[in-house]
Image 1 (cartoon, each protein chain N blue to C red):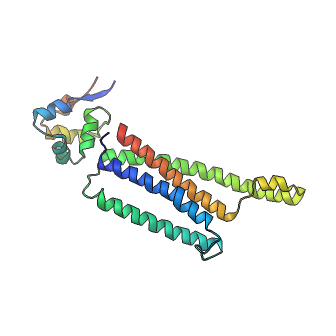
Image 2: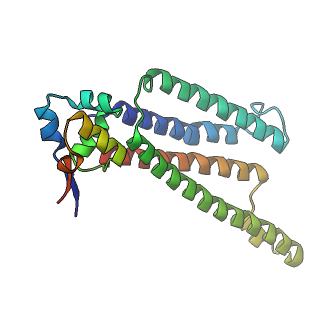
Length: 65
Length: 159
């Protein structure tokens, strides 16, 4: 099972750039890129911050595939 | 290949370490009997090299901080990459020190063998001066620093 996410689609739907989302949740643009490409698995705290920023439930944003 | 500021600063760190290992240390080593090193005793040489090393890396890292690392966000991904690369550096450092201590011990053992057997050839094969041991440790540290930075760069590109 691989931890995947809808971050790219949801972020674009909410009109955020990677830089803006990163700044709002306190991480760099590179970290957002890594999460979107499934290279980096965020901590629970960061995942919840991102979900909160995008007004989405964490289990809808991150899922196992 | 687009590089982030962090990746560029790691590459510059590698260049600084290579310059230290291949230019600065050999220069000191070759000039150890000339007037560059004023004090003849080993402690004096170590103190001088340490002062130069601290000065060199202070200037190098201050420049890096001022030019590239100003206003940079440090997050959990950076912490994870740093902890992984420092762990590798620490393991390499421990392993190589273990090998070096074994080598130095064998040197002293061979000195004792020389006294017992008078076999000069056997002793010459392992002959290494105290100053050479210090340079060997410094070279080792420089190489470990290069490997650590390369691994850090690799992680930044792949994670």
